Image (cartoon, rainbow over all chains, first blue to last red; front, side, top):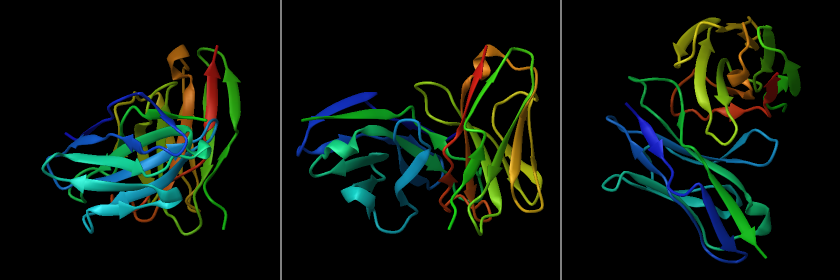
Length: 115
Length: 114
């Protein structure tokens, strides 16, 4: 069965500092991995996705993530945090076509950016 | 290009009642998935509809049912509401339901059961 673990339910960084949000996955087949952001009282917006092409994936708003099979990780980073990055971030895994069609989400990490 | 739309935005019901939530997919998308997001949790998959049929179902009771119409829009029905059904219900659309295809989410319907 597939699963996602997000370490740290809350992360605080100073404005301009590095953002690192952690995501580890478990999957018996090659996974597709996604990062979504959710602003208060809104739906989910896709930041980036990994679908077995390049292992370093660049997304919107300056975010990127690196797929590391040996570590079963897909951590999200941004070199310099901005106040507008404050939101909840969700990592999700989806399996290849021989499996399910659903996304399995982690429990989320709430990012706080300090002025 | 309109994205995924959901209605209503908010809903208040009492225990035992029934509720219907609606979703219109993004233009060009034919697959609709529904998720339940409880407060402080990640979204949980309820089911997915493709070609007007339920193709995959998560770990939700039969009180949760759905429908997809020929225009690809979808409804989520919940019968005999429980307090624990209070959550944000998210609809997501995609093309052909392929797992690598991005699911685009709507703003959600916030359901409160009293």
